Picture 1: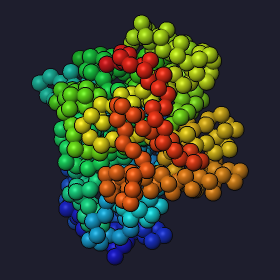
Picture 2: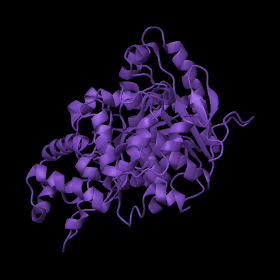
Picture 3: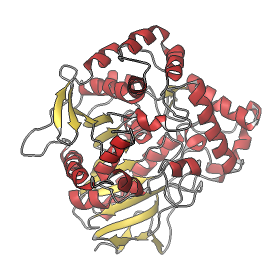
Length: 504
């Protein structure tokens, strides 16, 4: 019965029932990453006695909360290093073995959590008869800076901690989700922005193999994964901000967490100016946990067997243009510096392809393509050589988004996938009587996402509407007031970006 006590491998949990859906919040999937476990790989959760309440969200990962709240990237929960929790929505904790959809939240790997109201899994679970899980993972320097080169006699630091957290959550789900009415052999990972990058990276992580069956990457930045040499400058700059010498790195183990959060945000601001287009915090190719750059691993055929749905939004960059710092290149100066740092010979060729550059619209289009769209196209092209791949572009904009000049901006498709128009952001964008049309699009998109989770194919069982993506046709589903298939959208830009060098 829903809402009753559920028995996991390590103990009993008591959830609640919300509008006919069982909900378990703040479920611990790993030990608290504190004290000796700060900067170390996650450890399995310990067994407990009695029944634990799972009725409230757990703490959000340490992050600059003012920025997170301004961007709608966190809820009202407290912030704490003890943050490795997940949340579950299930139509019933029975033996039905429903498809499982695991949401990895975004936020540039410095903000965010799985408990944001925009990620409420209630409607998705009830509509699709699926089990929805959202997770937290470590952020900022605590999760995505690499200090392993300063390990000496005693190992104090591990690499890719946020990514390791995600694998730990997937292992917990594999072991326990059957108790919540889910099928551990049919798990779909899906995520947006940094969460999308996590998805495209997890596809190439050896220890993640067998933990999920399908993957959905929404507005990922698949190439924002760096080698140890490039990533070192971020770690070194972080130490400089804190005034810590390289032979004193062990003090990070006991430094007050707020100092780490503040220094993480300062590093983000500096890098936005110094290395526009780079991601201050993100996965690192360590040769072990993450053996190779994901795009290179895909191109070499190192992964196969997992269908992929991937896409971007038409106006990704408009949201970043309103941020401080903007995180992606949104001005002529930032774009020039990006090419100067990566591929100077490509700058004139590419900027000439964006008519009227450096006017605002083509400048934002170039920033969008550099960060999200072209890396996603490269990834989809490579992936389609070995496994079924579908690509989309989200174009729909409500009247309020048109009025604000944001358009189909970064993150807007999330509201349609989860159908969370009653969230703070959802109410804002569906003002002026726009909710009815938004609901129609949401039902179509949810249908595609649910089909994909159930069958490994976004099409309904009765026939194909959405053709697979490949290097010949580049078929792309355009989500708008009326959905349609377009063959090779933005072909000119796709061709002009071929072979460009990126941050590595």
